[in-house]
Amino acid sequence: MLGLCAGLFVLNGFLTGWAQAYEVMVGLTSPTQVQQWQWCAWPLSLTGWAAIPAFVGGMAGYLVTAQIQAHQALPLEEVLNRVRELSAPPPPPGGSGP
Image (cartoon, rainbow, N blue to C red):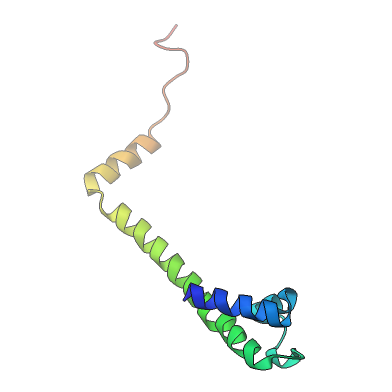
């Protein structure tokens, strides 16, 4: 899917110009405003509108799921010990006392 998006962007970059291809892909410019090669600007616009947010959302969901699963793998007793360590008061500075 990423290859398709890149291919459409490169094709539009060569045909309409790189700045206009970027603006069509991110939705700043409508494909109807492209003077030439509108047939090529429409797929780029649809890809930028639908496929790229879906890809980014999928990657974010995957990363969040991986983090949740990594934390669920810890036994409850280990999690409680870590919480106790974090909430314990720090040792007094300077060693064993006066």
